[in-house]
Length: 566
Image (tube, rainbow, N blue to C red; front, side, top):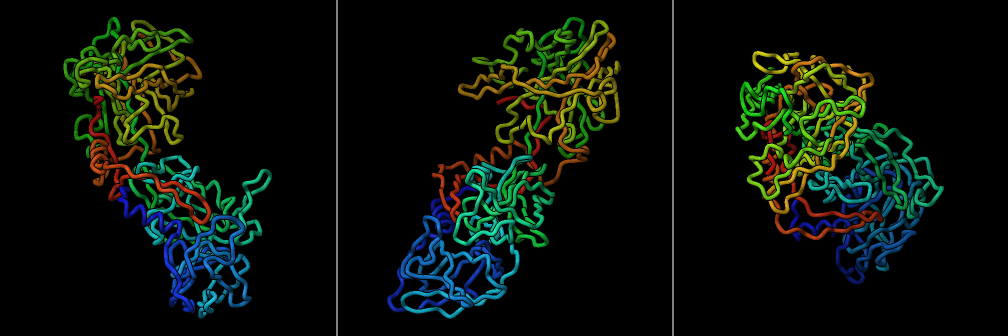
């Protein structure tokens, strides 16, 4: 969300409730008609212990904000009273036109609210109180739009700091209802001190993010705050980037509609090429029938007709890729390397992945990423390899670009990722993987061969010729077999990919953009950075940094099967 100075000041003003004004001497306080509202969305829905905002005139002698616990019951020369008992309630902020206060947890179903100053007492504003009225705080306090959602260390989520699949974020709520404690309004909630337990909501709490049910790991009063609720949510897997709707249900009451959180889809998985010649191999990496690379896909909208539901080796690679030996692959029998077309494990890779002081990166085969994600814009690359003799294998290793795309990074540890490895038989006419009906290998498939995936940093990097370019770490993806596999002498095709859906996607959506278009959109908003805004949301300190924004949620897709580093 790109914010100008005026917007930043407005947010700071709203969230710290710092307005200015001086009460006209001798004027009786006046609450506007229906001027007492829920502080989160300015509705007339209230629950015990919730924050209320009172709007009117002559409400206080001066502007003043609470700075410590216990929360005072007189502020700015004013107090807020319950008509039924005459009790003064805790006040967070006071000004001539607005007061923020907290209802007692013992408030009745119907209650009159009045403001008292040295100049008199206002007429009461009668409110109705229900057991629970969960409302999400929003950035502009309108009750709609961007939610006050943060990381667990209280940094507000923005497009540049979004929620991502499997990540935990915190939604901040008002008036969510009873907990397993007996809290006192104006006093900090337990849970910060050693041995003390936080107050947990007694009703079942569920979360819905982008239309998908999401796991809640905590729901209750925020420890150390008074009356402020937090809900910790594990983000689901969603294939969109941009703002997505969010709602919380407490018991049978759901928060307001049209509230959003920024979200970024999981980045793309790119496999890497092998550049070490293997004796006896008959194919190389150039385009056409002699190519050591092939791909198939099932998403015509994204990829067109090339490779659609059938393997093709017409990759479009130029003659400089004649040194490519398929996808980088190392096969092991125990600790012994029994096949190697890359030299990464044997320290014989040379400068294949290093283009320092070299020509254009686009002509350097070792700096080329091969998109490979069978169920996420489904396309899988396979690399040719030949075994001169019968070979027993206990471990297979492929290699991927760990940085992925900087704009849309890939997280190799993400629990939504399901890695796959496959080996296909060679079809001699033309030289292509044997047709198997989908992305599953006809000779070997990790989906049905027991074993364990692991990944690690090789220590090597893709090094660009561009000065000061960020070197991209090369990671290995290894599948350790539960039982040895023996491959007979012959020609095969090998592939590895990251599957992130149970079912393959049929196609991309019309509302999709390429990752390059996303980068350009971000760059177009990349003006002078603003200083972070620090604010207090009813006692909880938060930090909001400058950001860009997307006008709507979109699906970001790769621009091509092959991405040459730039």
